[in-house]
Amino acid sequence: MHTETVLSVLKNLQNHICAALEAEDGGAVFVRGEWTSKLGKGESRVLKNGAVFEQAGVNFSHVKGEKMPVSATAHRPELAGAAFEAMGVSLVIHPKNPYVPTSHANVRFFIAYPENQAPVWWFGGGFDLTPFYPFEEDILHWHRVAEKLCRPFGAEVYPEYKKWCDDYFYLKHRGETRGVGGLFFDDLNRWDFDTCLNFIQAVGEGYVKAYQPIVCKRKNTAYGERERDFQIYRRGRYVEFNLVWDRGTLFGLQSGGRTESILMSMPPLVRFEYQYQPEAGSPEARLNEFLTPRDWLSESE
Image (cartoon, rainbow, N blue to C red; front, side):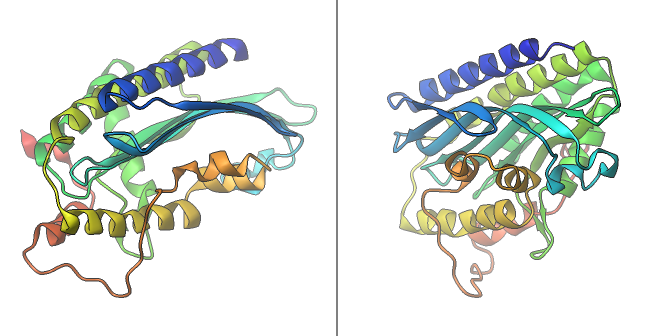
């Protein structure tokens, strides 16, 4: 087990993803900001007010602590109180055009050091897509890339992690999914260390293969004030999920992480409207048809 190898993979993924997004935007670049805290260090990269991306953040962090926060041990009580080390790349992309979906991805590595016991390691991560005006062909492409990257690791991996994504990115108080899913996994140590690391790398590279063609296809679609208003309203669901349900946000805040980097996932513009209901039969109302889990690949066969 070599943490330096993990660090190298994560930094390479950060570079790869930023370069792909900059190329798609066609002009704007990520502003880099290195930071240090009492727990460790990292590099936040943020692209703002681009031609395509209103705000995009791709963050790397490497932190250590003397006690695992509650959010990290809720499902692993045997590690409560253990020292830990965590590193990862996390990103959230908020496009300007309402026809381009918001996207999120994360790959991470944890090591816990329980007293008088051997270290315990695991990986986690995934990616998910949040459209405002969904296109079936885009969603199918997204899930086909996800299935293809999982295939070398076992036929059971995609359906398992796809379901985990549907279950995790679910707003219980709204009774709807955050978007159309993708992959999500945690506590990954089912294979040897190198295989798990290879899977993490495949997920990070797969995110670019899944997202960039969708952005390219939709970024020049004409839109007006109506579509923009709906996009900004629906971004409110993103805020609700991240502040109420997201374990990564809780972990960052509870562990004393850098607040600006943790809340970088928030959209730059958002609105909340009391008891908003889209007009029946409208393109906005159609989104509701996509906010329940579906077996996209089986439906397309």
